Length: 132
Length: 109
Image (cartoon, rainbow over all chains, first blue to last red; front, side, top):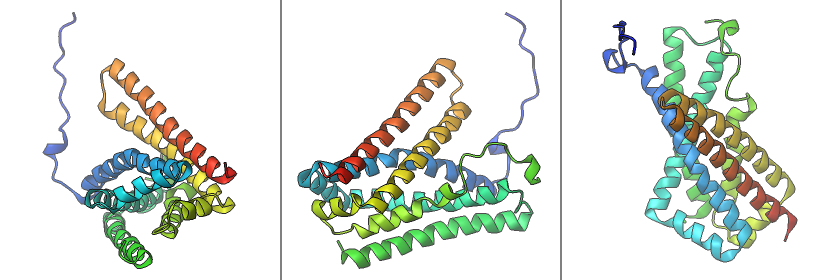
C-alpha cells in the first residue's frame, strides 16, 4: 500500500450557489431517466395493439385510471421538457447562447415551453377524446 | 465557447431532437379509438415508418444517454459493467419488442 496523498479536494455541488442552469441540467437528466423507463409504456401499448382487443383494453383501462393518467401526464411533460432542453443543448453545441442573458433566456424558454406544450397537448387530448 | 470547442460527438442528431412531435400527433389521433381502429392507423405505411424511425432513434438515444449517466455515477468497475450490459439489453429489448409489434400491425397477421 502506498501512502495516501492528501490532494486538495474540489468543492462539490453544495458549495455553489444554485443557478437556474444547474437546476435545469439536473432536470434534463432526470427527465431523460424517466423517459428511458417510460418507453416501456409505449412498448406495452404497441404490443397490446398488435396482440388484440383484450390486451388493448387493458392499456386503455390503465391510461384511464388516475394513476395511469398521472403517469402519462408526467411522461408528456418529461418528453416536452427534454425535447426543448435538448434543442437548448443543440444551440450551445453550435456555439451560440453562452452569454449570461442568452443562457438564462434559453433555459427559461425550455422550462416554460415544456410546461406550455404539455398543457396544450392535454387540452388537445381532452378535446379529441371528449373527456375520456 | 466556439463551435470548434464543442464536443465532437453529440448524443443527438438535429432531426432527432424534435422526433417526439409527430409521435404526439399520432398518439392524439388514436385517443378514444378501440383496438381495431388503433390497428388500422398504426398499421398504415406512413404512420408505421414514422414510429419505426422514432423507436430506432429513441432506443439509440436511450442507450448512449443512460451509458453516460452510468459512467458518471457508478464507480465500481463490476457494477458499471453490469449496468452498461443491462442498459444495452433494455434499450435493445424495448426497441425490438416495439418494432416487432409495429411490423405485426403492418403485416395484418
